[in-house]
Structures are given as C-alpha cells and as structure tokens.
Amino acid sequence: MSEHKIVDACNTYCPGPLMELITYMRQAAVGDTIELLSTDSGTANDVPEWVNKIGHELISSEQVGDVWHLTVRKAK
Amino acid sequence: MRVLVVGGGTGGTIVANNLARRLAPEIRARKAKITMLSASDQHMYQPGLLYVAFGQMMPDELYRDQRSLLESNIDFHVDPVEKFELDKNSVTTQSGKTYEYDVIVIATGSRTMSNKIPGLEEAGDTFYTEAGAVKLFKKLREFEGGKIGIVVGVPHKCPIAPVEAAFSLHDYLKARGIRDKVEIKYHYPINRMHSIENVAIWAKPEFDRMGIEIETLFNVEEVDVENKVVKSMEGSEYAFDILISIPEHHGMETIESNNLGPDGWIPTDRNSLKMEGYDNVYVVGDTTNLPVSKTGSAAHFEAEVISENIASIIKIGAPVKEYDGKVYCFIEAGHDKATYAMFNYENPPDLKAANKSMHWFKMSYNKMYWASVRGLL
Ligand SMILES: Cc1cc2nc3c(=O)[nH]c(=O)nc-3n(C[C@H](O)[C@H](O)[C@H](O)COP(=O)(O)OP(=O)(O)OC[C@H]3O[C@@H](n4cnc5c(N)ncnc54)[C@H](O)[C@@H]3O)c2cc1C
Image 1 (cartoon, each protein chain N blue to C red):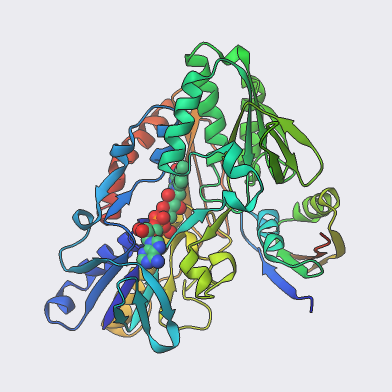
Image 2 (image 1 turned 180 degrees about the vertical axis):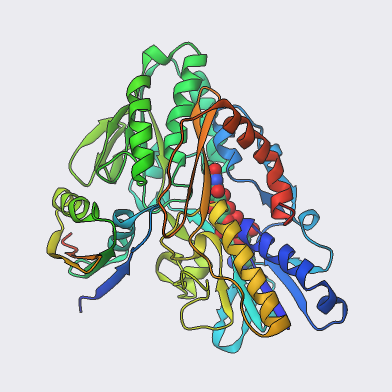
C-alpha cells in the first residue's frame, strides 16, 4: 500500500521546505506521495525543478490562501 | 516529581542544569529529582571539529568531563538507554536497570550515515567525527594539488558547515601556497548554493571571488572508490582527489529501534516541544523532526523553553513559554572574518557583511560554550 504523508514546512527558513521534502522522500517507499505545505513562494518553482531533475513525479501544485500545497510521488 | 533527561550533550545538559537551579528548593525537600542518563562520561564541543580539520584546534580542547558541567544536585549515570516504554513511563538501560519517571526529556542527538551511500564511507572524508577531522587534516597537510570536491547529504546537522568548510579550505590552501594548484568544487542538493536564500545571496559572490566552483542539484547516489568519482542522482559526476563529505544524518539507533520516529527523528510539536501523542515526553535538539536547523543553538533555545515549562508546571501547574523557532548561528567566512544568521519561524535571517570582530566573538564563544551548557549564559 502506498502512503500519503503531509509535511508541514510553513514558516521555516532553515533548512527550508525543499530540504524537508528531500528528507521525507528519502524515508518514503517508491509509489508513496508527499504533500509539502509551504508559505515560501519560491518553493513553487524550486520543488518542480528538483523533482524533474531527479525523476520523481509532480502530481499537483496549488496555492490555498497563503499556503502552497505541492504533491510529489516517489518514482525511484 | 521525577524528571529523566536522556542524553548529556548540548540540549540535555542545558535542560538539566537550568531545571536543577529552578527546582533547587523542591530537590532539597525531596519533592523533585533530576536524573540524567548518557552514553559517555565526556562532553564534546562538536563545532570545534571544523577547526580540527584545518589544524586550528587540537581534539583534546573539545572535551570536558560531563559530571563537571552538571549542577551537583543532578543524579548522573553513564548508562545509555536501550528500551523506551513511554506508555509505562519507564526506560531500560544497557546495564539492565529500569528507570521510572514522571517527565522524560529525550536529547540523544544525531549520527552520520555515510554507510547509506555506496562507496562514501571508504572514499569520503568527513570532519563530523574526531577521527574523520584528524584524518582530513593530515590529508590536506600532505596534499600537493589536484581536485577537491565537497558534497552534502540531507538532512545534516549544522546547515552552515558546508559553506564554512569551503571558506576554511580556501584559506588553508592559500596559506600553504598551493591554492593555485587546487580546484575546489562545492556540490549542493538543491537549486541554489545554500538552503537559506540570504546565505546563498551572500556566499555566491564570495565563492566566485575565491574561485570555488559550484554545482547545484547534486544529490550523491554513489562513489566509485577505485576511480575516485562521485555520482549524483541527477546524472552528473565529479572525479576527485579528495572528497569532503557532509553526510546524511539520522537520529540515534536506539530511537529508530524503539520506533520513536522514522530515521530516528521524533515527531515533535513545534511550539510545546512535546512528542506528539504524549503529555510528559519532551524532545530537544537534533533528534526532533522539527523543520529547524539541527544546531547547538536551536538545542539551546529549545532547552530553555522545556526547562522553564517543566519548572513552572511543577510550581504553578501551567507552562509559561512556547518555542518560536529561534536559531542564532555564527558563520565563519574565511580571512579571519565571520558573520551570523538569526531567524525564527516568522522572520528569515538578514545577513550582514562579514567582519573581524564577529570572527573573534566566535573564537571566544568556542571557550564560552562551557559556561553556556552550564546554563550560565
Ligand atoms: C562539525 C560540526 C560543526 C558544528 N557547528 C555548529 C555551530 O557552529 N553552531 C551550532 O549551533 N551547532 C553546530 N553544530 C551542531 C551541534 O553540535 C549539534 O546540533 C548539537 O550538539 C545538538 O545537541 P543535542 O543535545 O541534540 O545532541 P548532542 O550534543 O549530540 O548530544 C547527544 C547526547 O546523547 C547521548 N546519547 C546518545 N545515545 C544515547 C542513549 N541511547 N542513551 C543516553 N544517552 C545517549 C550522547 O552521549 C550525547 O551526550 C556542529 C556540529 C558539527 C559536527
């Protein structure tokens, strides 16, 4: 069974949302999805760039109020 | 009230000392007791390892006897915890003893996991351990020229260390008169050269000026030990003569084996610092899963919140503080200059230009640390 995990990286500057996502992706199994919550608008560009380069899959990216929700599936 | 502190590093020591002073009357009246269990009778000032790697400090300068750092009313034992039974309010130690508590503070720190990446342990040099820092120094001392790569795993303690290592390396090679014979290439896992945007904005031009090359989006996948090549998940590679590695960290093995949190990171409430699901379990320092940097500084500010709250709960029945994510980090910038980054959950760091007085402040702090863990600063 694949798991879906929410990682709350709102209001964090160091190590920051993308580093949090990398940490949780390393713990996840192939097929799992992680939904990253971030208040840093840069995350909306940083995450897709990292996901594409590594070869994971960006499922969705949307802003709800001040919070970005980026869902990524671990592909390898 | 029995308070059990597990771990005698930065966070655990500050919690225990701070609490011992606040609860002195209760301890004297035998209404409270503070016990600390640790894995070592020595306390290491870990930031000093960076200086050891460049011949600026000797390893023996980094240690103090743990007992000598503790208030005399703390019951201290070198007897690491092996089993946590949080639902029964008890732990069992290596010696087979069982300790019961009313409140527990977990402060067991983190460890490097070079062995997770094939080849990294054999081919990489890390200054995150005493033996590693000494070995790296000896290698650099004999180095006559070639290529040095710096690679970074996620997560790791002290997020500023990769940048400081690059500056110190540049300085050291310059002082040896061989900087022009060495290529330094810094590799970083995300798409800018440091996780803190303002640090990246400040450090990038400094790297350019020093001729330190940068490759971003480089997550180490494996190291070919024989051919001395490090390969990234993103598909690029770097042939090196020396590979300085800041490896991925986990929490301690005991935390993992007791299933307190994935990879040894304990789920912790970001304001109360209680372990999720438990009212009498506090977590401090590196072993939290908090989205703040794993630093002695974060451990220090968290420890103050935890000790004030445990004391006030005992005295007036209510907590008085919340952790606001505060961290203060010195940043050694080379050329005997330094700056600092201060931030919390709400405010990003605003970096000032590096100057000599901040460097000397950091050098003094290297000594003042011992007053700080005693809870005197
Ligand atoms: C090279 C380097 C440079 C650094 N630079 C900086 C810096 O400039 N600024 C900064 O703020 N931070 C810096 N740090 C990070 C800082 O040292 C750590 O973040 C800090 O020590 C964390 O404190 P802690 O209490 O969580 O863990 P630690 O201080 O590591 O203490 C953990 C304690 O737990 C004990 N323990 C382990 N397992 C058990 C067990 N099973 N039972 C009982 N006890 C146990 C250990 O013996 C130890 O006493 C640096 C670290 C390194 C390695």
